[in-house]
Structures are given as C-alpha cells and as structure tokens.
Length: 568
Image 1 (cartoon, helix red, strand yellow):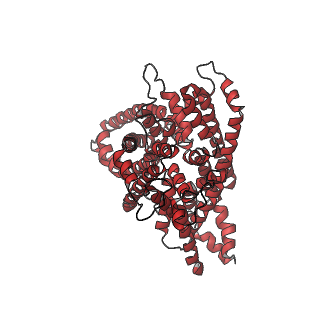
Image 2 (image 1 turned 135 degrees about the horizontal axis):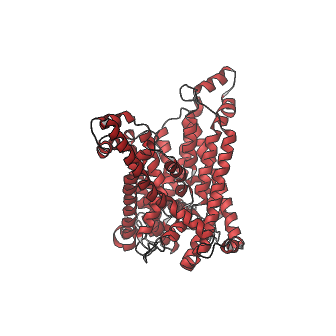
Image 3 (image 1 turned 60 degrees about the vertical axis):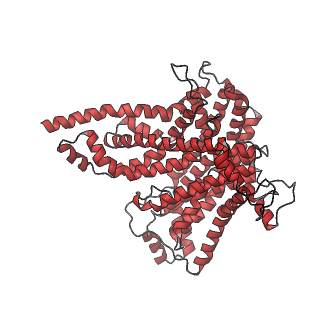
C-alpha cells in the first residue's frame, strides 16, 4: 500500500509540475508571435484593419513581395538542384570521401549569410583582389554582377542547399535495397531504376527539403541586404529593416503588417508542401534489407572530381578571396608579398572596441542561450514524455513556429512584446536582453528535439526500479535521466551555439549601441565602406566556425546518430 501511495504522490506532483514549466515556456516561445498577430489587427486601436489596408495597398509592399517570391523561389530551385544531386550521389553511390564531402557542403549553411555575400563580392567585380592577382579583373567602373536579383538567387541557392541535402539524404536511407533488386531482376537498368523506383520514393523528402529552403530563403536578410540594397532591389525583410531603421518604433504597426505578410507566405509554403506530401507519400513500413548502394564503376572518378570542383568553386574560392582582401592595406590595393599586412586583423581583434565588444556580445549570447535552453529542455522533455497531456501535445505542435517563421518576423514580434513590459515602466528594447529573449524563442526547438528523441528511447523500467528502492524524483533525474540524455543535450547546445554566434537576421532589428553582434558589425562595416576590416572580421568568424565544427566532428562518435547534421 505504501508503494502505491508513493507512486500516486509522485504522479500528482508531476501533474502539478508540468503546467508550471509549460506555461512560462509557452509564453516565451509563442507569446511574441501572438503579440505580433494582435498588433497587425490594430491591438490598442480598437482592432481595426486600417494598418492592413494601408500597408498592403502600397506599391513598395507589392514590389518587395514580388521580389521576395522571385528570389526565394529561384533560390529554392537552385538549392533543390544542388542538394538533390549531392544527396543522390552521397547516399546511393560508392563515391569515396563522403564524410569530408558532406562536412564541406555543410560549411556554407553554417557561415552567416552576410559573410557569404561579402566573400562572393570579393571574388567578383572590378575591385576583386583575387581577380587582380590573376590578371582577369574587369575594368574599373564595371558594375558588380552580384548586385542584382540573379546574384541574390545564386547565393540563396548555395546557402540553403544543405537543407535539401540533409532532408533528402535521410529519406533515401530509408529506401531498402529489396525494391531495387526486384526492379533489376525484372530487367530495369540503372537510369530506369532511379527514375521509376528511387525518385518517386524520395519525392516526399525532396518536397519537404524544398519547403524548408523556401521558408529560410524568404526570411534571409543578410544576402538581400548586402546585394539588394546597393541595387535598390528590396525584399520584404530589407523593406522592414529600412522602414524601422529610418522611422523608429513609430512605424511598428506598419512593419508588423509586413512581418505578418512574410509569415503568411512562409506558412502557405509549408502548408502547400504538406498537401503535396499527403498526395505523394509512400509507405515503406515492413520493408527490410540493406541500404541502397549503386556502383558507379568507371564513372566514379569523374563524378568525384566534379563534386570536389563544385565545392572548390562555392567554398574555397570565395573564402580565399575574402582572406586576400583582409590582407591588403587598403581596399583597391593589389595583394603582393610587399603589400600583404595583418593590420586589419589587429584592428578588428585588438584595437577596435566595437568589434571586440561584438565578439564578447555574440559569445555571451550564444553561451547563455545554450545553457538556459539546456536547463529548460531537459526536465521539460522528460515531463512531456512521461506525463503527456493535451496541453503538452499542443505546445509540442506549436513550438516549431518561432523557428519556422523568418527571423525578421520574430524580431518585430519581440520588439512589440518587450517594448513595454506589462505592469511596469521597464523596457527590454535597446538592451542585450531582448536579443537573448529572441534567441531563446527561436532556438528552443533546436535544443528540445534532440533531447526528446533521446528520452523517448529510455526504458522507464530503470526509473521505476530506482523509485522502488526509495529514490526521489530529483535523484532519479540526476542519476538516471541526465547521464543518459547528456550526449543529446550537449549536441543540441553545440548546434544552438553555432547558430546563435553568427546570427544576423534576428539581431539586425534588435541591436543598439553597445549591444552589437558579430553579424551586425560585419554588415555595418561593409555598408560604411570599411571592406578590408569587414573581410578580416568575417574571416576570423569563418575560422572560429570551422574549428568548432571540427571539434564537433572529432567527438561525433559520442553523440547519438543523426543529432549532428553532417554526421554520416
């Protein structure tokens, strides 16, 4: 009887504990999104549609919307072509060096978009140090070819190709070899097997990856800002940025409508992809066999050369151009043995207070966000698994929203939410804490999902055995759940850190003097003409990211399979 009473007491305690954790987490993650929705419909003005009508009927809004659809759509098509090609070849064939190839393909996604744009601008155009070294630079005065819709589409396609690759590779791994063997026994050749068996079965994953690439490209701020603003080619994120920076908080109701417009387009794209998935889905349950592997034969070496040549063009050349620009004394000076200098590196990393402060802010925010989210996600994931109810299932379904929405939408939502804190005269706007709150909301799901997957695999019998000998809830969590879930929690923390330390889209609208982040400083340096210093700072961040990715790769065997994106 005492054991039953103890179990009932623990059950009631957990039932009371779950809402206490779910409520603040729900407000943190979903509160800003709800506040944005209310503002778009005139919250505080008697709920009116005047703001909607005014903003949506402007020519600038329609133009920015069309530009966003064109660049995001074109970038998605390119991402699908690149990501699908790599996924089919890496997952289905016997090419060598797959781990290194995947690692290199992931780097463009981990590098901030503004650094990607800066690196490509240093690789092309009349002022390119790299082209001058090769003697093939266009004449001075020639236009920068990337300052166009085409340039934006190309870089968006490269930046988000990894999303398509990861999603499609996961789907291809589920295709058993039995189906292919059956097709071959029927006389089908390799191309016919791919076209009639592999491609139809992989279509759901391809659609899902394309939808992710579209939503991410739609909310990308760094690339359209660096390439589009000089060409007066505005997209919805850059239009919001220009309106808010130019007019201040007085235009919050208007930019809230623009943010909602981006959100509606993004959600429409996701819903459309889900509808297509429902019509394209194929059940593979019950099928078994070894993973599919196709031998390329004599074509293997040419395919490998082609893939590595592509990696060289999209990764090595832009980064080399960025490094070359960071080593010249002034922009426009050719790089030679005599002119090479590290002055810009010293200025950026040692002398200039704004860049040192940005490094400190970005590292502080990334570490603190990862630590807070880990502390919240561990008990929450355990409670949601062990004491699931309707409230926890609703939150679990909605928790992806802040991450799925474009970053600029979340920024506006956070400004509206934290501009005036309820029941106080305090505000978080203009402080570093509003950026932290935005990071917590945006990256919460990045931390939660790996921990949920890990805890779902834990056998409750171990916890029940510990409870039977008198171990309390806290002891069971510390001695059983925490050690077993720690690898997934560590992997989630690393992913949050890597994503947050170089973030720009969210912080671009939230920073103020003294709270600059690395992404903001790079954009501001380039915008003010300090290209050499911007290149040095950008190159230092690239080195930091690659080193961190290398450390993660070195310990990949200790993490659960699938938690590290580039882990094979």
